[in-house]
Amino acid sequence: MLILFQEMEDKVISPEKAEEAKLKARYPHLGQKPGGSDFLRKRLQKGQKYFDSGDYNMAKAKMKNKQLPTAAPDKTEVTGDHIPTPQDLPQRKPSLVASKLAG
Amino acid sequence: MAGVAGGGGNGNDFQWCFSQVKGAVDEDVAEADIISTVEFNYSGDLLATGDKGGRVVIFQREQENKSRPHSRGEYNVYSTFQSHEPEFDYLKSLEIEEKINKIRWLPQQNAAHFLLSTNDKTIKLWKISERDKRAEGYNLKDEDGRLRDPFKITALRVPILKPMDLMVEASPRRIFANAHTYHINSISVNSDHETYLSADDLRINLWHLEITDRSFNIVDIKPANMEELTEVITAAEFHPHHCNVFVYSSSKGTIRLCDMRSSALCDRHSKFFEEPEDPSSRSFFSEIISSISDVKFSHSGRYMMTRDYLSVKVWDLNMENRPVETYQVHEYLRSKLCSLYENDCIFDKFECCWNGSDGAIMTGSYNNFFRMFDRNTRRDITLEASRESSKPRAILKPRKVCTGGKRKKDEINVDSLDFNKKILHTAWHPMENIIAVAATNNLYIFQDKIN
Image 1: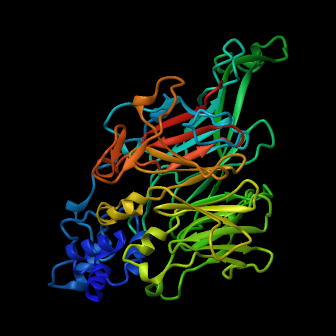
Image 2: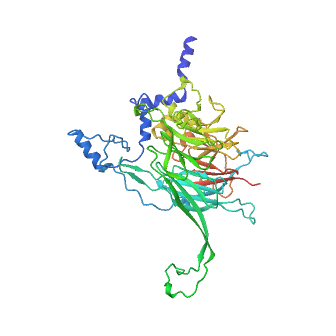
Image 3: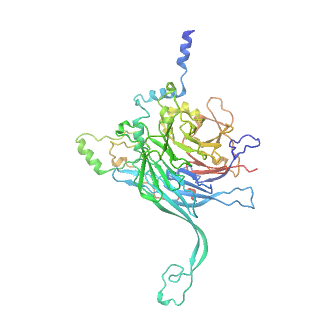
């Protein structure tokens, strides 16, 4: 009877913890402090970073022969270390027009 | 006016009906058309919307038509203007979005209307005024504006005011800039009608409506070492009656109430609201879903409401250790957190609002569903903003989401929900049962049924 009870306890997991297990299975390298600095810093840096020739040349000079850090191919977001290159630039925004709610 | 949950047919309950929908019908939604804020003014006669393209559209309620007693006042376009334009921060090579994060009306003091609108960095005070008369018969210029030759003028006349088609003009009266390093998430007008606060991720500033070149910093939670950053400010609001009191919420699910009389810098709170958490139930998602996306005081000033990812909580200002009421918005999403994290939906910021009597609260969800909770009867209802149920005065049918395998007729399975159709912004008329619901690029207006 005691052994049965133990098995039952192990099987009852909250849906949240089950989801957590799923996530950790897909991304084993996910940081230990999830709500901490990474998320918050990403939030504080929201905004499209554009190519800046000053940044680019300074970074090139610093790195010398090494490759510049580039953004991960699956992420469109630019991090603080990444120097945008012409390939990363987004499409030009359309010109300002009137709102469709008004018309 | 307290009844909220329709559905039943008994005496005091009423039902929500479709009234109007604004915006384009096409499937291809331009990003600029996405509505980012909705706000009624103090009388409810004006309804303002802001969008990602930096534009503001103001609707005005028409006078009720005596010949058509069953038609309630409809909202029609009153004014529209470009509030903010995209800017570029040259120092950081960052673009500053023109998206309107918040609009807040000022109480009306004369014939003109004033509102504050803000993007990530700059707050603007707009004056919206009407002109319905035009002067005619100037001496020195013709009707078309050309200057007359003064030597050819032989007689003097007094210009007279003639009626003209109503023209509504919006002009920026104040621009409050350069006070926020981080992104502004809230603005709140004080009950003194002279000052207002603006909050970004780490700081809250106090402004005087007349003064644009100075702002007082009243809260600063930036750590000396950014590596030690553990939480950010997510929303802030002034108390509706006590001009010295304001609250701000955090990404950790806590609310701090501050009193500006106690010190100039309100880094130390007067009250700290936090619900105790069971440490054994903590998961990777716990902090993310506890982040408060909106905080709103009740009209009475006795309560405040907070919205986190899965629930809405009502707090009594006299009780800091737990909320007095908790309402589940979409608990069925708890077993979908993994995919909601992967598609970033877990970071969606839903707002919430009170009705005029504080007897009911409303908030949005996915699939263009929105939820209403009646605090007195404890009944709740799920409704949908969709073009399918938009026939004039059509009664809205309650919706239901099922989680299990067996789906009843008219129910929708949680896996069929459209997570791109999010209702983040809703507003409730200050006195009547009229609600405005922003569904991506469309604005829906619903009213209670007239019997």
